[in-house]
Length: 158
Image 1 (cartoon, one colour):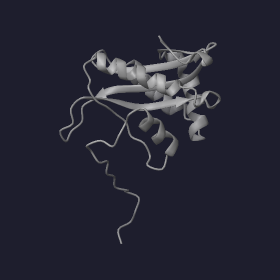
Image 2 (cartoon, one colour; image 1 turned 60 degrees about the vertical axis):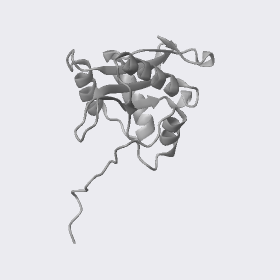
Image 3 (cartoon, helix red, strand yellow; image 1 turned 45 degrees about the vertical axis):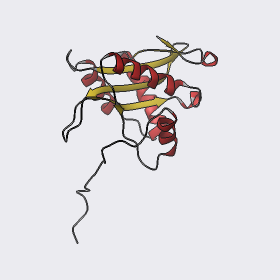
Image 4 (spheres, one colour; image 1 turned 90 degrees about the vertical axis):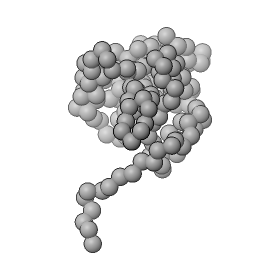
């Protein structure tokens, strides 16, 4: 377990399957939408993904209540990308924001990735999500060597 700043009296521990309801709750606070089916699928894939997948699942707990979570895994993508750690979900209960929980979760995830020989960690953030961008930048993340491109298939050609 990794200690979080003392004033929070929380600890970082491995994510457990029974943390599902807390993750759904925290995610809904940030997105404004409860997505239990989505998170059930994520948890099923995460916990039943096989032994060969390198995954990081963490929870920050205080007084028996999950205050934050982080999920990540090692991915190797096409287009010449080496295997890297990938943070694909992070959230903190609004009552614990700006208390160091997310940074502690991220630091522990990075330690676990490094322990497994990973030398780079990536994530993807909406360009207009200033609080999340600020969080990752304050933790050392910078623009990477890849550019994300997308095509909206719902648009009609003119």
